[in-house]
Image (cartoon, rainbow, N blue to C red; front, side):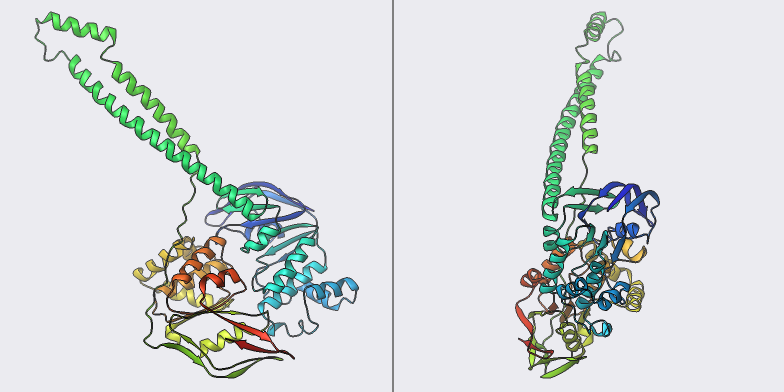
Length: 491
């Protein structure tokens, strides 16, 4: 039950991983890094989806790979739902699965599909479990269920996640990826990241001290250089008369004694010290500076109310979501909470259909491949000025825009960043985001949180991240369950 990387190197047009040699033993290893850093790559290599360019990976034990988005019913799900054993019953019960979920897979929420995916993997008790963003789309109750299950896992687990709470309660080691570099540390994410920050701060202080020392030495060397030049000028016999033997004797004596040459020698000594300090500076790792401050621009509408939704009942298969008339005023920021399957995404789509499309940006939880292709075609048709605006926002969110737009297929997090960046150049009066932190790395979440906090236009956000909602919204709407699969919006 272990995974061994031996001098493994992998990349596309650019290297993602270089000379990785480490071991994942029983317990949990978290893989983290910015969007586009290749966090999913180790999972794809372990599972055999990708092959390393150089080096190797050896695995002892069978594995199951739970990808970010379960696009279809997992093969393992049929086994879980058809198994009448007490173990299978306890698994279904612990994950809160209902007997009718599998037949109506297409009507389930993303969170419910995710619970089926992970529960099915747990049912088979694999020796190695690979999880890519397992808490995406999960409500608080489901996250607790997942955490309890993961804590009981006794095999070797590898998890890619942006969920700080999960990463602080689960891993015994963390692999930080910063292509093509990597850094494996023991402890939880907060512990390991704090060590990295402290070391980065120490390196920064070292670089600043050595840089100051070099500057001082260069100033002294410059002074000695000028004195040496003056000495050279004084030692020149060009301006001494041919018969002035006394002056020539004194100059020759100074050369022999080396008095006039002392400044040149001191200058050479200082140049040697400067060279040594520069060598020390080159040995100190330079940390990439990340800047995450940006603001979404918009043109507020003249209306006091952005939308007003009349009383209605929305059908969701066998479920019903009802609500009284509700509205959103200009500059209101509403956060919507509710359990998986309560109709949050259905409500967002209903709101979007009731709004002025040209003044609204709606980003759903997941985008279809055709939607992504259409969006990229639209981006490519923009002029250089419009692309420049998108590039600057992408950079502020921690991604390299040229690599994203011109390279391989971007990650889901990078696609979300592109959509938000594109919104900046449009006249927006309403921003609708369904689980906006899904697929984003930790750095980008903090950047987006800061941006939305300063965003003065109207917003409607659905998120299971209560900390994120607390810092970005001004009013809260909740969906509660009444009875018989009936839900109601409380605003």
